[in-house]
Image (cartoon, rainbow, N blue to C red; front, side):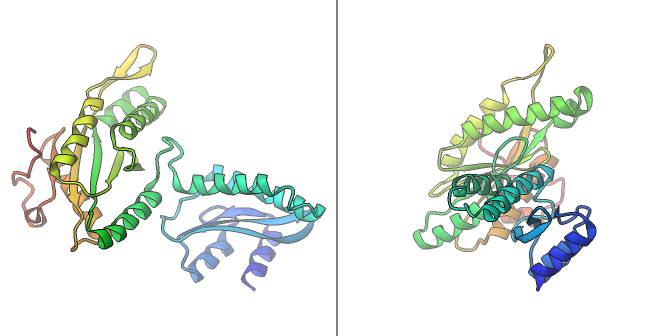
Length: 289
């Protein structure tokens, strides 16, 4: 019945492919609310005006807005292939292409389109899995939160294209600075995060931080003979038996904002005293900072 309503609404509105928050997405938003979905997009399967079904892609973990216009175009292409295959009775022979498109959709839903790093949704998913695994083997992970210092002046002075290039270059350098098993992600804007799989202690974190700082010391070429350097304020929190994912993330975020308040280019390790410390209290700084 739900699918029939979606198809009927698509036919009436003349919008066969849409997503929540987009024109023609009203009925889809109602469907998402009924089923506890954070975000969804749909495309009616039809050939020559004959409806054969409905293709629905949804996300329960992410924020509204997980799917963008490029994802919608990809879904529309995917739906067209499926509808054509169904109509011609050769779905099996087209399965490889369909699976490829399905993988592209999955990748797009889990990665930042600008930097190609994992996005917030995938980062949270991997962090939760890391905590669940640590609950069984005792090898607790750590989380780094990173806020770039000096990004806004670059973006304002040289324009969004230069700002985007800076973010892409930093993202690549961050990815190269962390260990192979770790996850570097872009959370949005100029905020990034790293999941450091356990077992890891302060010494291990410092080794990763040292590599990140080396990358931050390098200028980033912006084209037309221009270059820029940015710093970063970093917050660190360690997992443990008392930490669920919300607690771990909140602590890293609190440590990062404490670093931001207390001077650019600093790193703050989470400590319970940060929960009640006034803004002018001296933070717990990383060794040598």
